[in-house]
Amino acid sequence: MTDLSLGDLQSHVLGILDESIKTPGVIHQELQQDGHAREMSRADVVDLLEVMREHGQLEYAHGEFREYTIDQ
Image (cartoon, rainbow, N blue to C red; front, side, top):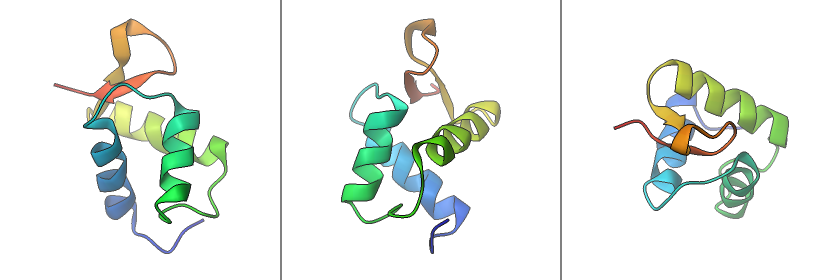
């Protein structure tokens, strides 16, 4: 999937979300542009985001499914 460890990838996602609420498509695009997830599909990013949400790192923004923000 990628050369980065899961922890590094999660750190990059948190950095992206530090700025605002994002959809998986936007997060996927930013990870690819930054060179962190060139070989990840959008589905892979959704899976990663859901794992991070299940571990309390992220939450759905405004209760909306598929918009994410940092769990505060």
